Structures are given as structure tokens and as C-alpha cells.
Image (cartoon, rainbow, N blue to C red; front, side, top):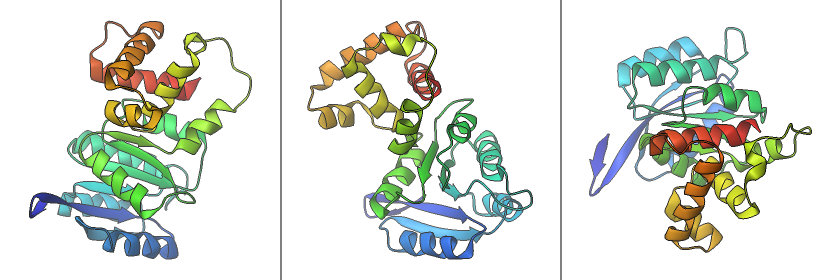
Length: 224
């Protein structure tokens, strides 16, 4: 991470096997302030090589890439996070399938993001990159909608939440912190904290560490 004035410039490695999409995302990144694209890759092997060579602040990767075009991007994201915890990863995908998101966040959501190519704009991408670089997480709101509108669910702890608590947890799942949740719902931060504590209690997460509780609450929400 280099510094321009008082703002840190994030170094990015981009991976996507589709040349047109890769060039499009590259063009967006090259027009963003405080972002430096240090490498572009078309497959997982070159991505992993670029990570070792450049040690970027953030990796942006597609899901399906050579050689099998299945879930190489998810696997690579988890390997990168395990080997280099300081590197954030944003999965930029055309697929809104919940299984991919749950696989990505299976062992925690710190430093991970999942955005949909069809919906992302330069501002969204810049915020996501900054968030995962800082250890946060981001989930495209459409993913939350897909899960909410999915097939009939078995009764779960999520059903105990009030409508307002559900709104709060949905925003947390999108990667918002307490102050952003408060701003979005026009609530005080004290009120948001109260709702979050109630959510933790109803989900049986009262004894967990705060950071772990947020991750598990999001995963419970996504899996409902």
C-alpha cells in the first residue's frame, strides 16, 4: 500500500478469463482515485503467480476460470486469504447463486466481498475494494434478496427477529458498519447497537466475540 498525500493507494491484481470483461474492469480501475492496477490475469495459475510477485492489497477475481470453469475463483480467494491474510479479495461474478457466497464465507467473511458484474458501478467497486482491504466484507444486496425470496424455509432463529432487526441484519450482510446502518435507517448509533445486541441474543450468539458474532449472524442470515 503506497500513500498519496494522506490517502493510501491500493494495489490491485485483477483476474478474469473473459478479455472484454477484464479490459472493462481494468478501465474502471484505472480511472479510480487511490487505486493502482499492478497485474491482469486470465487464469488461476497466473493469478496465484501475480499474488506472490506483487503482494497486492486486494485481488479482484471472477469465479469460473480455466482449467475447469467451475469455482476456481472461490478456491483461489480462500487460498489467498489463508496464505496472505492482509490481502483482501473481491469476487466479481455474474452468478447470484447463494451456494457460491456461502462457500466463500464458510470460514469467515473478513477481507472478502462478493459483487455481481451486472450491477456493480465504479463507486460500488471502489467502496468494496477499500472495505476488504480494511478487513471488512461486502455482499451484493441482490444476493440477500435472492436468499430472502428463495424456497419456503424451515422455521429458524431468523424468524424470531423483528422487521427492524431483519433490516439491520440485512444491511450488515451487505457489509455496512454500525454508523452506515444508522444513516441508512435514520436511527441513532445507540439504537442500532441495541438492535444488534438483540439480534445476537436471538441467534444464540451472546457469548461469542463481537467480530465473530457479526460473521456468524451474517452467515445465519444468508443460509436462512
